[in-house]
Length: 264
Image (cartoon, rainbow, N blue to C red; front, side, top):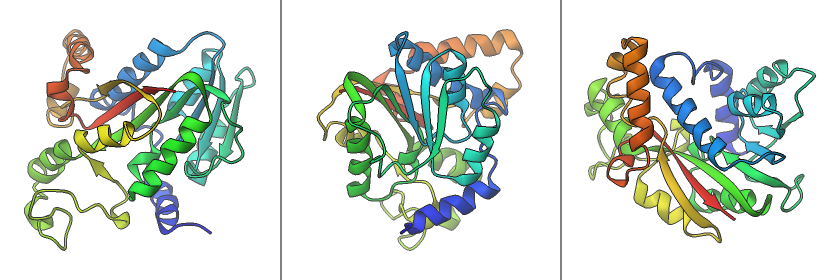
């Protein structure tokens, strides 16, 4: 039986264009470049990869193009259809519909690299968040790497709340932001917001080795107009600057998206 959030996500991704999210401008592309850099850092020739919550395949397809054996699992029928339409004969990739909470079709310790780059955006209880992580760990080989992506609270408050002037109308214990300035995470809002303390507690609550945390887009959403207007030389400097500072603990908490990298 489908959960309510599963139905909400099917409706959401039937309307929202996920396919160009990471490439539609210079600001969004930072997240893609940063994530790929850190996948490349730990991946080895011959590794098998599973992406749980693959969207329309930005990462899975690129890794398949590089010659890796990839399994792409996606909940949204619309996203999965787009992903499948991009597979070419030379790619060693399997695209399947599935839920991050139940990977029972996957045997234990099947993959060297496990990517969970979207599901935890949409999981609203600690029990289910822990279940997603437990399943990701189970299907990963010993010494394999697992990547978990999260959306953080404060950049959302600053950019969506204050910069776009949504804060006052959404402030209050019966709305989206409570009187202690914490997000009221509920399924009908689709996206779950975390802070770094919550993320670290969740990662360290499991039998895996904490490797690093990476700010995948930094403060880009706050200064996106400036970034998008940069000439190529300036943008390349900004991108390299971002990649230099993206693991700094004093800055990670203000990133829009982060990845936590762990090792089984």
